[in-house]
Amino acid sequence: MASSQFDQLTGRFLRAVRDAGGGLGAVCAACVRVLPVTRAAIVLEERDAGMQPWCASDEFARRVEFAQATAGEGPAVSAVAEGVPVLVADLGVDCEQWPGFAEALTVSAAGEPLCGAMFAVPLRLGSIRLGTVDLYRDVTGRPGSRLLSAALHIADLVTASLVLATGDEARQWAQPLSSRWIHQAAGMTSARRGIDIADAYACLRGYAFTHGISLVEVARRVVEREIRIEPE
Image (cartoon, rainbow, N blue to C red; front, side, top):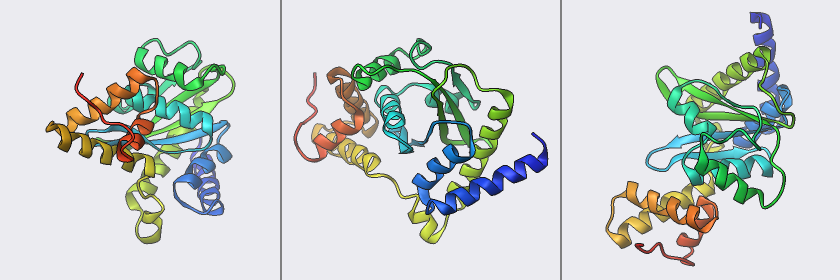
């Protein structure tokens, strides 16, 4: 893409974020509005908890992101680790390299067909990797070079929005309730069982995977004292 095209894309994206009211949800909506994709999500790396979804544009994307968070692996996790976009041509058949994610994804789909492509684009600030923008298309196949270039540019804009947000804008980027549940549940599990916080997160993820429910649902039940994570 030429520099003038990047400038036009920047203007369209910023206007779309503003028109949608600003904040996380507006950024996801803007990605879908200015790129030829069907849905989008923003996933951020959290200490000890790993990659956690902070927003998703629809329920399908939300389920995929919760499956990644539950398994602790998937395209977004690999994209952050490798520092390059990770492309999945068909979510229904191309996830063998992440068996835990593939299994969690199948469970979360509850019998609905899994199809379409996904690509995870890292959010980077120099050598610091903050998370990813995950983009979805209903059609299968790898994105073309033009779409990938545009997605990389959007990821840079999202990174800048995240890092430079202040005041009311920063409050619109507040940690979502699902993420707060996970941290609170890990703290409760750590205190009750006398284990390190990193081990507590692993216990939550293990319980979720074993019982076929999402990590955030396990965390909610722990916080609301519906369940306790006992030693196996």
